[in-house]
Each structure stands twice: as C-alpha cells, then as structure tokens.
Image 1 (cartoon, rainbow, N blue to C red):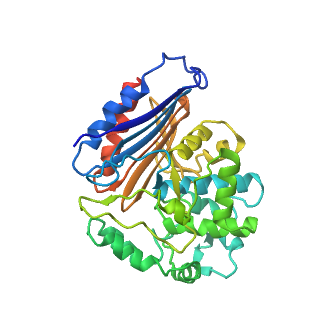
Image 2: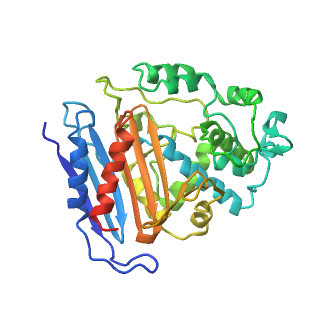
Length: 373
C-alpha cells in the first residue's frame, strides 16, 4: 500500500546553541523521510508524526494512515495521546511551583494532604516532593494495585479493555483512600522505581499549593506561555473527532482510548504536533523554569540522573540531554531535547507493541546519525 507524506519546513536561522560551531543547513525532510518511511512500511506500523527543531530549522512530517486501508493521513489537527510523556509537563509545573515558592522539594508530601498518612514514612524518613518527581518515592507503579497485574500482561488482547474497566469508576477519593494501604520497603529518595501513582499524587499537591484544579493549571500555563492551546486532559466532543485512533500490538481492531477519573497527570495528556513543536522550542530556551526543570535531582548511575520527571542523560557525544518515553495501548512516543546541538525531536506512532519503542528509537538513531551529531 502506498504511503503518503505531508510536511512543512521552516528555516528560521542557522545559528547554533551555545559554543557549538555553525553547521551547514541540512535537508531535514530528506533525512526524516528516509528514516520514517522504513518504519511506516512495517506491517504493524500505521501512522507516524514527527516534529524536529534543529539549529533554527523546523520540520513537521506526517506519514502513513491512521486506520488500516483508509489512507487517512494524520495532520496538524490530529490529537494524540502522549501517555507518560505528559509527566514532563507535570514536572515543569512542579518546577514553576518551586520558583513561585508555592512548595519546596524537601517538603514532606504529607504537608499537602488533608488526611494523615503515617505509612508514607520509612524509618523516620518521609516521602518528599523531590521523591515523587524523581520516581524515588517507593510508591507502586499504579493505584489501584490490580491495574499492575493487567499491565504486566500487556500483550493480552483484552488488556486495554480490562484496564479501562478498572479505571473508569476509580476516582480521586478512591486513590487517596488506597494511598493509606501503601507500604514502603526502603528509605525514599534513593532507588529509582517508576511510579504513575507518584505523579498522580503530585497533582493533588499542586492543587493544594495553587488552590486550582490540576487541568486548569496545566492549560493556563502551557496555553499562556507556550501557545499550546490544544494540550489538555479532557477533550470536548468536537476535539474527540480529531483524536487519533490506534492499534494495540498486532491486533487489527482499533484499541480504546485510555480513560481515567483521576487527575490525569501521569498518562492522560493529549496534544497536537504543532503544540509539541512549541514545547520542544521552549525546552531549548534557558528560562528560569526550564533551567529548574532540567536539574538532575537524584543520580541513579554514571550516565542517568532523575530530574523533574525528565531522564537526564549524560552522553559522551551528545552532552547532557533530556528524554522521555510515552505510551498508551494504542500509541507510543519519544521526546529528546539535546541543548548542545540546539536539537529537539518529538515522534509518535499510533501503534503500541513490544517493539514499537525500539522501532521509534531506530528512527531517531538514524536521524541523529544523518545530521552528523
């Protein structure tokens, strides 16, 4: 089946970031076409959208078809579920709250909760805000706990449906009730253990700090500061018509949208590619909030530190970079921010299987190699 392509390229400047030498302008369209088309031609991959900012050039490309056999190319109005990548937006809001002196990283989370949670202390060490935002709190991956068993059987055809059946009536009050049952098994702040529950809890903290609904905080900040007017958690009926469909593993049926009645900060953010382009450009600016949000807060090993939800990576060639993966049952995506080369990339596919992340990473590796980083 022939795949079609739509793209936009903008040349803004050719100045490099920092002290890096100015490079010759590269043909981003040609480089991306070559890398992404190979991925789209794979049997299980349907649609891919990608946005790149590189040394003043901008490129947006849409490839493939959203639905098998319908030739319905994604476009700039397509709304994607970005899953856990949305955590970086939450991290940015926490960084802003620190600069606004609404909270401190060393504050115990208990300070912002209306009930007493003596279980969020281990050997006299309470769970801190820093522990939540760096995934070192010791909280479970998901609440309610039964979702974890479903996710562990990710490739099961019924996994999306079973997850939604558990989450659809699980509300914030249920989450805060179940938080009482969490048992820590180590001092918080040291061991990296990825936790959606910890990021959801940060939403409650931010609401208490600002006395505003979390989604209101999200939309106000990113719409006002970045013009990301299509980035939100809950969509209107009109917006739902633009929500990308997608496929789970190699099953032919369209997978359902991931639903949640919680705050949505850990995996329910939805956005468009143009909005993500604004996000990438913002990440490459040295504003106080970005500088704060990019701080490595907990060193995990010699090359990886955990920051304000960002994975802060030290690479011999690329320098210090910031990355995050996102995934739901019908989409997977990556974001890379590489300040040394004034480079940022967001890429998403409307398919989610065990190899999707590897396929996307291969595309990125080819692109990075082709622009001679």
